[in-house]
Length: 305
Image (cartoon, rainbow, N blue to C red; front, side, top):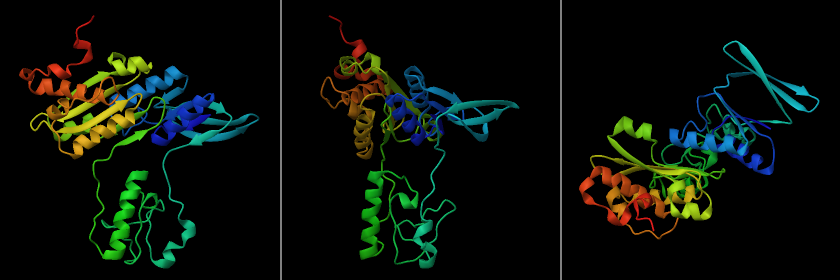
């Protein structure tokens, strides 16, 4: 299988079919897979994919054509005047989404869509026809189940009671069930540095007790905090239970917790979620070296017996 496009959908397809035993090649036009994720996440997932047998091609150029072959299909591509090709039984193109709304006769009802077919809505879920509201994937917003549920509640409330509940973009943990998993909440480190003076800490999964016990040592957890306010800005995770860890971080961010406050929460040991408090302690020590943080020292600093 050739998978063209290494965003969230493309990497999931590649990971799943690789697990099924297919020979998979993953193609990305840009310099890294998962371009919307933190750079450390992209690098870790790409390395894990290659180790698992997926051929990852970044900066591969532009596709010129597809040709049928006796065994399937050939993709011809070029870069810097150099032509190359790859063959497989099939090609999956995962380079973006279009809404399948053409058969809904929305124009008849005066409901406007954008160039990709997504229904246009205002900040309350109302379409261009005032008495018609829309929510979920059809609007092209975050296109995730929890956010669709939230938007659906708001749109239905506004349809019945009037514009009382605006659509919001709350703290949103996002993850993907690839192997390894990856997840994030809040801005990437690069994005955070554009707006704040930040401090980060990373704990790698090959140095934490629970991941070693489970034999799932690929990955890391990164926490980003604001140097001035100590507020947690973001969390990025690769590895086993990454999505679950990011959700715990999302709760802390939504509650406005300081990173030193999170470091003091005695999360159970040994657990995957407990890794988060120890990374938070790593950030807190940088912000206030005199604080000590004996209870939440990195496991690598514990006495060895």
